Image (cartoon, rainbow, N blue to C red; front, side):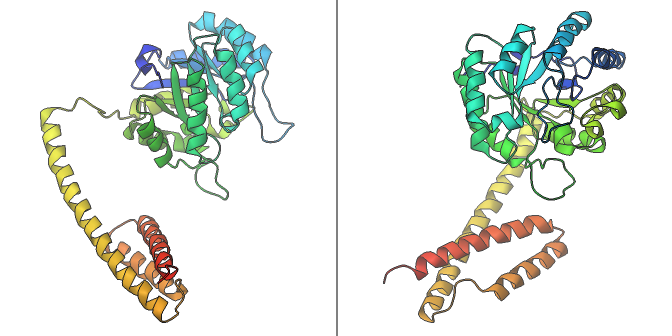
Length: 361
């Protein structure tokens, strides 16, 4: 994919690339008041965001002002000398946004999950040069996310970025959408030149989680943040609980620690090289132990086959989980992490035993 570097098209005036603005464009005055407060707090986002069309899960809630809001943004863009960005969910949205001079577009999670809608938007974008940012789909499907990015890239758009907004999971967690950080990390591995933003507002779903999620994203090498801000969140017509005031946003940004990604000095390179060599040796030891484990598993499988014993033994599996969890606690290791490793080892053990048990003699 031909992807332009972020600094070629994004005006970054702070510690990190920032997209900020309210969840929804509710009124001209609301947008103006938010922009005024951003200015008072010395925040100048690269793009001022506002939801013009709001894809609500159920009807009869605030679904945006549509074309009317685009007119407000067009006027405010001139008044405050700010670039604007809105979400588009279909080709008509994209055409209208471009008609009113919106500077950039983002594709939301629901739309990313629909290749037909993404392709329709991509067809509209063949006529223009405009930045497009693509949120991950609602569910944890990396290929679907990557597919949407490829469709937009194939339309000729080079000013591209991805936005990580977390993934829906059933049941109650502390997050509105679980981050599953390994998925955006894998996306970066597959497309290293693609700028990556984090949306802590939608991951956290509450004001108190925005700062730690933002810091985690920067620690993982994300290029920027998209944060919802409203001059008076208590009056917001949507997602009031996850919008911060411009004053709160300024505090979050001031406290962020931006760490080096590249261009390490010689001392740093030498020290990291030494430590990574140690990790390499440990990994080699681990792999050798895994090989020994597999050899024992083969003996177990052959014994079970000869004596007509079922592969899966519930009591043994429960014993493994119980004893390894206790050992993890004793060693000061993360219990959940150890349990995940045991689960992976057990799945491989079952698979390997099954291949031996069903192998023709």
